[in-house]
Image 1 (cartoon, helix red, strand yellow):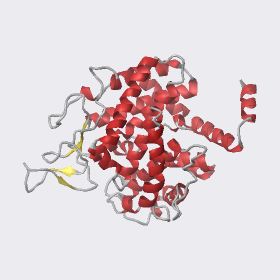
Image 2 (cartoon, rainbow, N blue to C red):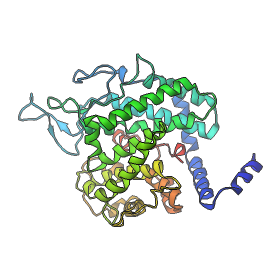
Image 3 (cartoon, rainbow, N blue to C red):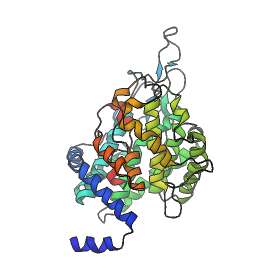
Length: 385
């Protein structure tokens, strides 16, 4: 085996060798945690959207439902439409479907990571039990649409911005791409799973909610591109992959990033630190998903000079020392950030930056605060590198 690895390494470029070294460090950092999480996942039965319902949902048992985070009862009109309190999460919201999807993402991410480390097919077999429940089984599957996400009580039954809730399906999609190369995969089931994602992509790109979200000016627009890119890669949709690359270059970078690498629209929010981290994670993940030898988003700069390396460089000092953050502190969860952000590990791999990798190693890799997990959709970098 060692001789084979040595022969293989002789054919790798210095850049690819360095990336392999970083991947080995990432595996060494996470291996104990990953195998423990995978052991947990092997014991878990599927829980899909059909396991919980909410009387306020306008959809059926197979429809994902969530409620706007920052919307609250109006003290002046208790029986009227909810009113907004930006940045302040209403603890009485229905979150069961969101929690089920995050749990699903954790399970597939852990099983796929453990499979990469061990090549043990028991992780694949159990993962497909969950994948079939969510995407194939007629009794338990989720409808490939988000008509009822981030609803507002007595105001709207669903909104385009609810599409951000399915960022947690990205590690599911990535896990499928890890598993699909194994000879033990049931190709018929795999095709049905991919059909679900193709249907969801069609909804994301044609329904008014999807179009609205695509046009969002802040992290919502970024996350639309990130999701579409992830699901398009799984389904080999080259036209959508090209569309997302072009949108990153011509819309996301020039409209969201200042020349110093900051995101002005996120800095104006009531949680500027957390939103800046979140949007940077999404931008970097887009580069990780979409970059090719002939179209490398990691090194792309706009004519005005905006590029992803500058954005990481802007945020990095405030990750190392949050106390130097010169802007307003977040109204909630200020103490919970930063954690082991994907922009650090993906950026370290792309630019061979050991400082970023060292910082990533030192941060929390297994956060337990629900809001942090919700805004950290990439938690298993092993399956992405």
